[in-house]
Length: 368
Ligand SMILES: *Cc1c(COP(=O)(O)O)cnc(C)c1O
Image (cartoon, rainbow, N blue to C red; front, side, top):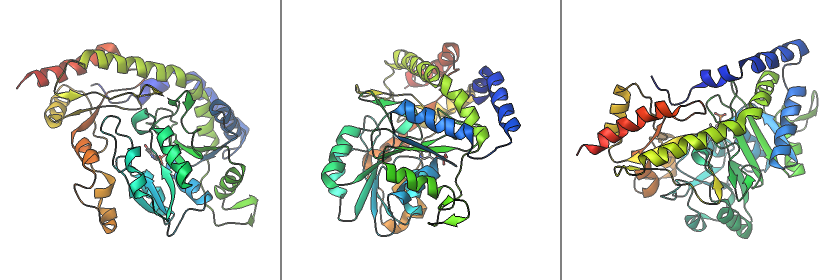
């Protein structure tokens, strides 16, 4: 069996360091928001060249708290992509604002900047570009629009820790960046975790308050906040993983290049496109085919895991019926969601396993 991702192998490779990190936390006797969390925040802020990093309970909360900290809520509109994990738009809805969707670029599957302007209204407050599958969205164009229209840019970098745009790490480029450390993300822990980066002092201060019930001083509350904190154990594990992340990303890129070389000539599939100004960290390796079902069936039969990210666009989700969208509104996103699927990709995948995946795909596609 070849899995899509292999967390056991990943942790196996750094098991001793992880166990030691966990033991340190146990010995410390401090389990939530302590020295490990501080060290994690400092390490990530320094790496990304931002003034602040604020660790929270998960990536969804990172988005919710950030929107809240910027004062976005009832009556406001936030522009985003219909082709992402639901949490992106859920966060917008959670703070009482309305997600406004914009179709994606057919090559990169990221929000299409050319189509953003027509959706900007008096109520638009922010844009949330998502760095989908590990590739940065087209940030220069997005930020240009945001500056002209006076909008906030919140990067959803939950799938793209370490990816770069014009040499700068994602998350550090907009007004704030949100990360998830869910176990399957390219930088993940053994449970839930999230983090926000920003160089805006006021927003950072608000976020630090919001994550602990709106209080700066214990038992004195200035805001209605949240309980969204990171555990020491996860921070300790993430500090170990952070030492590996660049090697892991390099492995992913090399493995992606192997897929590119071997699958280049297969006409029935479309490979991912990497923009020249970007480093894509391949959180997922997603390919497209009109023959998706056939290929996925053959992979399954061969003991190879594949997965569809994402089978339904957000504008067509039942929960958003009241927004009045219908099929055909975002034709690119809809076609992509009907054709896309992920094949195995993780830092410990081998070329030998890739050869098996490649052989199955080729065999199906060579048949008429
Ligand atoms: C995973 C993910 C989130 C949410 O992160 P959680 O830690 O699972 O809450 C948000 N946006 C995107 C694009 C994601 O992939």
